[in-house]
Image (cartoon, rainbow, N blue to C red):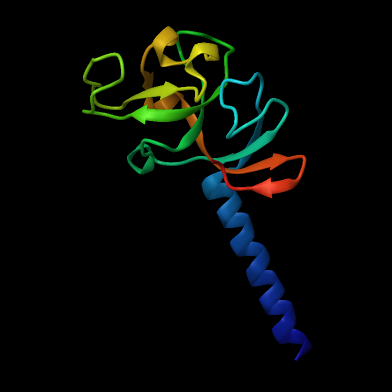
Length: 137
């Protein structure tokens, strides 16, 4: 019996390591109130790497706009490839239009333009706030 539990523990550890390598979760900190009330300043988000074809409007992502080196933003996907962006432009292949929930207080695609798929670092899967972990709103 002891050997079976050792095998089970080893299998679980290997599977956890493979999941970690595949999705490479990372943490980002929300700065400012552009995503309130869904995300508040100082909260942490847990994001995972994802394929661009799995990103959908309404999801929250972490992105690094190429036109603004050093800037990392946590924003909601407003439109994807082939869709009409809020600015009236049809997005090209692999382009995403990102907006803050509080548009008047947000630095987003209206300022830095559509974001190419490689600039999307990951999709937010959880938020750590004062009351604990929750799913992004």
